[in-house]
Image (cartoon, rainbow over all chains, first blue to last red; front, top):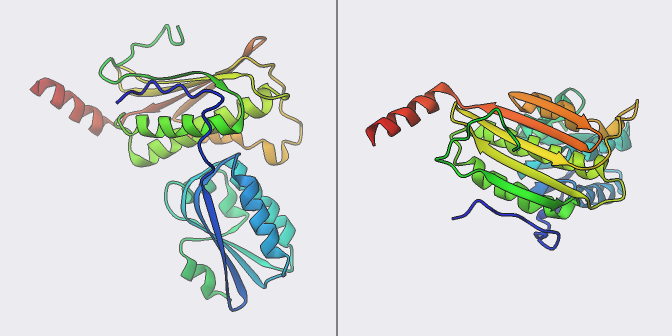
Length: 125
Length: 152
C-alpha cells in the first residue's frame, strides 16, 4: 500500500451525499448520509430549501449518518436557522466525532437546537 | 525542506500531496488519503477526526482565499515526528487577502483550525500562505510504541 497519492485535477471522486426526506406528523425529517464538504454543501442546502417550501412546523436535519462535516455544512445550518425564523422549528441531530464534535468546537451548539438522537429531536413536538 | 527543524519518524512514510488543483473536487481524494494515513499514526479517533477536519479547512481556505479565480496549486504534507507528534502542513502560492472585517459565514476556518489542532501556526508571505498544524501523540501510545520497538 502506498501513501504517496498525489491527486491531480482530473482525480475527482464522485459526490457522496444522500439526503432523504420523510414527513412524520408535524415534522419533516431530512436524513443525511455521507460527507458534507464544500462540494456537497450546496446539495444539502437545496434539499433543505425544498423542504421548507411547505412551511413544516418542525424541520429536523438528521446528521447521524454523516461521516464528515466541514464548515461549509455549518454555513448551511446557520443560514437555515435564519431562513426558518419563527415559522418552522429547526432541529439538528448530531452525534460523535464527525458531526457533534465540530459543531461544539465551532460554537454552533449554542445557536442551534442540537439533539443526540432523532427520537430526542421529535419528542418535543 | 518543509521542516528543517523536525526529525521525521522514518517508520511511517509521510503523506505527500503536491500540486493539488485548488478546486473543491480534488480536495475530496486528498481528504480520503489523509484519513487513511492518519489511522496509522497512533492518534486517538477524536484526534484523527480533528486532524482530517482541520486539514480540510486549511485546504478549503487556500482554495477560497488564495486563488479567487480558482485552480492554483496547493500542497499538503503530513508526517509523524521522531518525538511523537503528527504534523500537517498546507501550503498555497496565492496572494493572502486579509479576512473581511465581518467574516460572516466564511470566517470559520481559521478559528476552527486553531481549536482542532493542538498547535497551529499560519505564516503569510508575499509568495503564499502556509498553515502548519500539530497533534501530540498521547504518552500511552508513545509508551506502547517504545515497548514494541524494544521487543524487536
